[in-house]
Image (tube, rainbow, N blue to C red; front, side, top):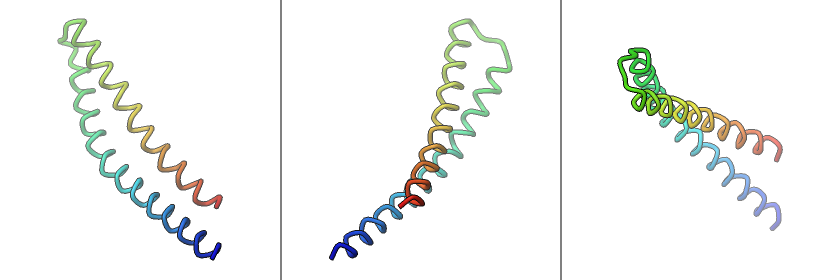
Length: 83
């Protein structure tokens, strides 16, 4: 009975990692596209100080979010390996 529960929990963990990996991949691609577009706007330089601050915030936030997605997937994969 305990073995069935353990295998069930392991299967649920595998499904969770697969889901997170899929979602991560689906989100990273558009995030990087948006990030590249915003960086092009940033390179233009024809912005007011307020606009430049907003663009810098967008660049920082999107970079942070994309990196967090990668870290989340890696963390879940390592947890799964340790089990």
